[in-house]
Length: 128
Image (spheres, rainbow, N blue to C red):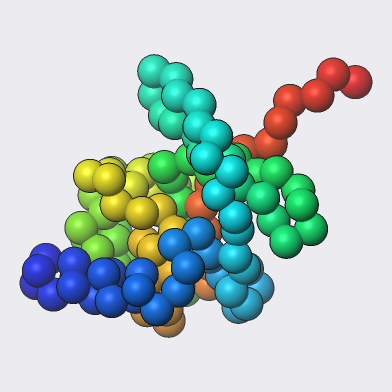
């Protein structure tokens, strides 16, 4: 089963740009700026949107499963076992083993069992 999912994720990643995710059902592409920052617990890579806005992407996803779907079972089928539950249907999922956070996000969304699945974006801190 894991081999089949790995092949599926590989094929999906070939059909789309590596840096894309679904927002409101539409594919959004980002351009890698090749800037990264790491801390003890996570790393953040920075991308540019089509409008030129800079966004940071961590190695985590935000996922909301449909009410009729068992999110823990769905995540287990994608071999995603490191997650935190925010509510009955919303989870923060850590993507490990060098998997591409964008391809995992797209595969979850394309399973048609989630309302949304996108990278956990960071915002730049600004003084007020």
